[in-house]
Length: 493
Image (tube, rainbow, N blue to C red):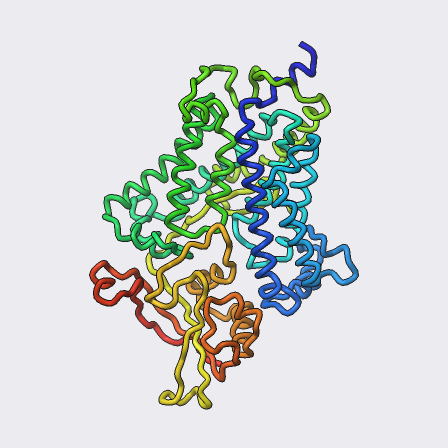
């Protein structure tokens, strides 16, 4: 066999469906991420935002990550931000429709590379509002899936294997951080609280919380089984790898319907498809299984009919894989370190990252409630009528049922959850209160309801509550979704 024939063994002709799902799915997530940025970034981080990006760029200097905003005399403007978002949404939509996939092999590299560069530029100035693990996850996915190529070449097995390595970091990293971080994961009580205390509950979260304790034990055991054991099977031959990936997908779908974790679960599902072969999907649909053996190994195997990819393409994939393998050393050590980092990046480009979630569980739910009044003298209790500003996703009105927002990311609501865990004078929160006090229209657009219809209140106060789900009997008697206990007042303007 000549070199081109040997390199042809790295073609994954049995993963064409997986490539379609992954590329179009990741493009759809990019589209959604750019859309949420288009609506929220100017208010949160724009020229007159809560944490203005121009001030951050001037203050951070070279410490800020790579960003296209540095290439202009005026580093940042809301107009440029929106243009970048529109360009990213257009590229994402075109890929969802499958147009770049019809071109030469390198077309997808250019398209996904552009989306990656645009989003990295935004992420680098996003500060606390972009400090989530799924942001780095999207960047890593965006860089990788472009190298799956267009329809002109077979899906590269090396890139598919690297996506499985990413899935392993996601799942095994999350499992280990749980065992190391909180005893409730070891004594199987973590899910007794999770559905009630998670950052942004969904419409089925209350039902999930009110299930019997034995079911919560099974939830924890199932999580451990998949994240610590089953996940390793994605590295084995088919159909074992596909079955293991299907188990990951099922657990992620359960998380989708019981919570709102932005695009974390959906991206995990998409990455899991890197281990699902066309043969397995045909078998699920009632077709014959063609057998399995050494030719089904995820790295090297005998290519199925379809022809080998060009030599230049194979060499490019080998070079990219070598780069990613070198960058994988730090995340690999982190997985087995007693000081494991959660949601950490080891390079400025977020190419190979460490992931994890819920290494520390909260057993009580606290909420910060912002209220305003139009009373002439807010300090006169008899005169002042205090009305709450309701957020889109986070709990507030005890009668309001939680809604499903994921995979859309409500960044302000998430920060309000973190604030409730550690109440304090966070700069962004102080700025938020000032803008509410001024009747700022941008901030009001991020809220669910403004009790003053755009008018500036005469006073603002911040109250602190403990929330819990209403029991079945309490809901029948009062119609309430939550019950809450007032813990005090944190601030007044």
